[in-house]
Image 1 (cartoon, helix red, strand yellow):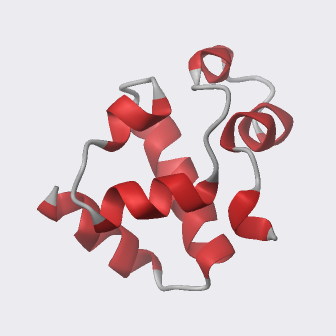
Image 2 (tube, helix red, strand yellow):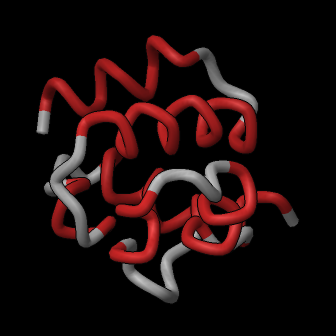
Image 3 (cartoon, rainbow, N blue to C red):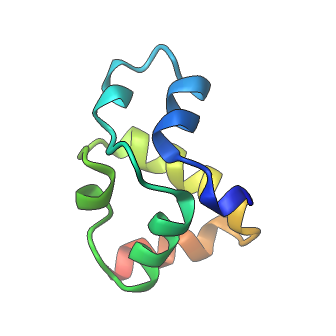
Length: 80
């Protein structure tokens, strides 16, 4: 399932030029990210990096993976 896709592996493959991708937590999935947002927890703690570009890239992919509108993802983040 797409929601069980490892974020770090996806990120490093999709954005190999981004040197900060190696700092993403190793074992998190898009489902973990979705649940973190739904529980209003800090996504930066989950991701392991406090980089807004990485966050936004992950959010865009999360919207695709979970088949929801990006605005839903962004609103959940704003509420956390």
